[in-house]
Image (cartoon, rainbow, N blue to C red; front, side, top):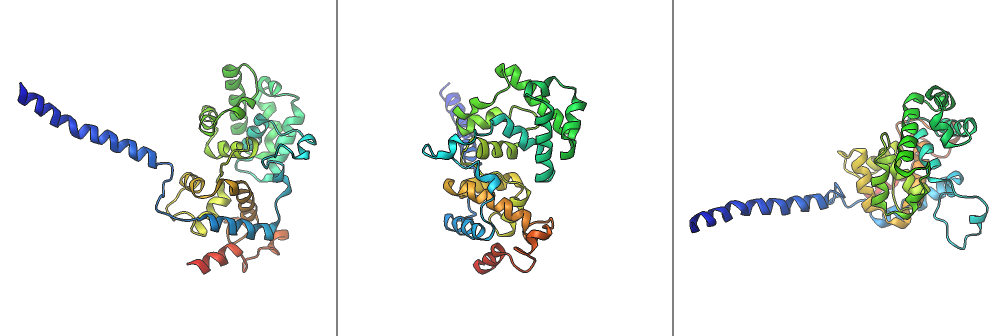
Length: 280
């Protein structure tokens, strides 16, 4: 009997070690590249300052900055609702900024409230947002969000997210079909003023080009890594400036820039690439 107990104890030992190892791996998943030491806080600050001098801060994004309690501008314009911000982000997928803005404006002018969007025929909503592209897919996503929100909360409002932690917000928004990590991150940073760092195609390409992530990084791993490496106080400004630079710089983006910006950041001049070459 004693021998059987000892044998049983020996059989169980490896299992308990395996469970502990599994918990450790789960904890480390937050940063997929823990040994990749870039970007450093100093590098983030330098890039922020370089791009700020090159482009100035995009005025259309400045309104989303964290508002200080003593800021007089808080009384001038009410903040965009979280639901508006979520729909705006959905409409921005796979299209230009100008087209997504036109689609959002058309949607809001065609339907007085989100309740009207929910009860409207899908074809009518599609017609309203067609200029933004992928109208059937985006209509389905928007109506699904509204339907699920009404079922779960009893009203079409996402303002309750302002009282939740970042992890709770991610869990809530991820319940909606069609709402992916990038959309969640945009809502976190722009509408909820949380310290997050969305990674769109432009930022992803720049991060790989200047060595902020390994060459094998995909967009999701880039998001996880940069959120760990970039100081919270720099995330908003740096994100907006990298996004702006990615749209304008022909070297940092696979898409060609427009004629107006070509003079500012042409094929022979990119401060990010120049600084990267100097550091390697």
